[in-house]
Image 1: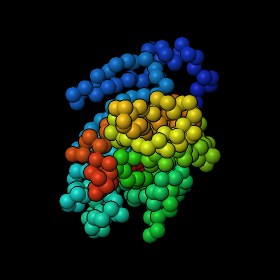
Image 2 (image 1 turned 180 degrees about the horizontal axis):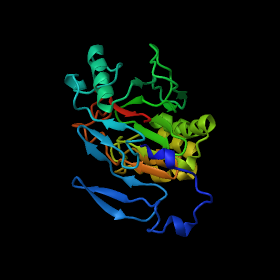
Image 3 (image 1 turned 90 degrees about the vertical axis):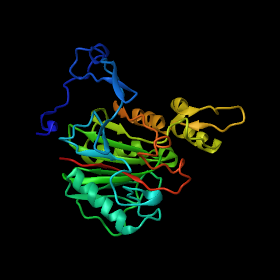
Image 4 (image 1 turned 45 degrees about the vertical axis):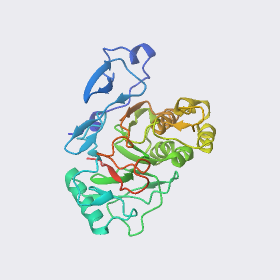
Length: 308
């Protein structure tokens, strides 16, 4: 049985000492990945952050999201029927792949996750949020970079090739959200917009929400122009600084850690429980598509989540 049915909000906020007591039932474990093995670094309660994912049969899954409540997967590029630059599980209709191959890949994903239907949007690098109420996929998808739902059995699917995937789940009200955050979406505030939509539409408290930030291009690989760092500073204020990296050499351009920027944005929106995959798509092209590393000629991998 999904554990959300037994969850209730605490009668009063925990004190700092209670939150950081390793005996507390609400503590989390902070992980790092070392040569493919998970190493527990701390059992002290953290405001954010598991750094690790569980890998199973061609997919990754967040440790903090109970699959009995939230069936979900970060699909790799393996296990599909697409060929060439799109090999093999490409879910991007707009990248030049054969439509029949992309549709077959969607069917495989739906069957593997065991959901009744898949829903997706037209991702436009903004901050619009679509409320998904049923499994009917319109011929012309809604333009949005966020989705929310309380409908069970409907897989929310978004497509990625360096941008940041974010799954958000409220176990108290059993609400699901998802976001696609490139640098423009990050500046526009798509992750906080999904949190806000979950609150306004379904009454979710940001402090209850569990967030998973999936594989994306890392700061070391994401060189940008000064207009990007300026826009992030304007959007996030002084909190942006840890995500803005100096040029690796005196004549170089700045770099941006997009997963960190979105973690900062989520924390600013009141989300306290955040798991970060720590997997770079640009250096993992055997498993993930990367627009930057593959010079734009590549597919899109799927991140899918549903409510049980």
